[in-house]
Length: 311
Image (cartoon, rainbow, N blue to C red; front, side):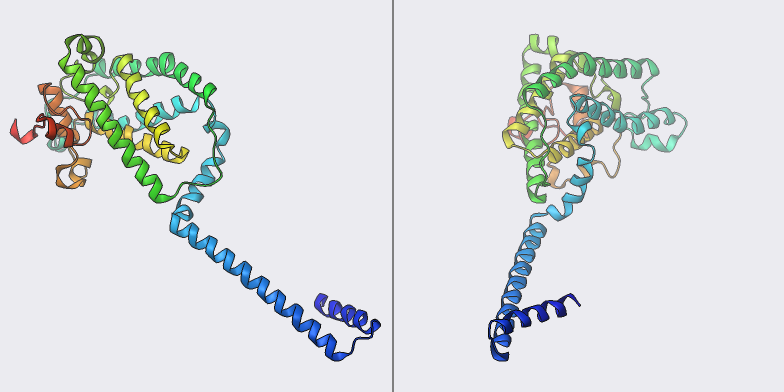
């Protein structure tokens, strides 16, 4: 109806200027062609945008990022990093704590324990939990607050590309693995460094999940600095940072859990590239081997790699 009225107004206007039927049809054809070209251009533009979006992986990550941005006030808060770290860590530890409690009563679980006859007592669990909470509140939070004041968290509207996210997570893990390997070797080779910063972590010769962060404040802050430097160096997207921290915390807890399941990470990564829980448990029992937290290449190069089967 609107189009009909528009054509009638156009006809009256052209007729008032002395234009005949042929001129009227010519004007209409010209305008129709222009409209068609405009629609084609817009369609091509939208299709190209959709193609770029699909090829970049943003179509997959954007809904997740949009949902997280509804919590923007919380994520930008200086309290969020500590809250996120503690809840993620305890959330990953809890299933293993439950298994440790059940293990004496469920013999079938013992087949997956590296040390079948060991289960941490409540007097081992509580100090680990208390130290983790204390250090995060007293030391980690003030450092986080200073970093937040100097460099507030900004949330971009776009999600990262999927390939970029994967690439940055892998690079962060490799960099962290290298940095901690160097730190770890030095703290085992230099007696003063070991006594001052690293000895506390080795008080439990048989590992369990809540002992993951049973360490001196110097060691805890060193690990935090490694994370922060790598993220800044690679200019990681905030979504990448969140996912990396989840993965990093999980791998650390799994390495100290004392359980070797068929789905453990070292069984999923091919070619023996990843050490895993058996690799790290051997370090806690023998001290002079398997210094890298995750991967095996640095221990192979240094000649400190030892297999659990070689015990």
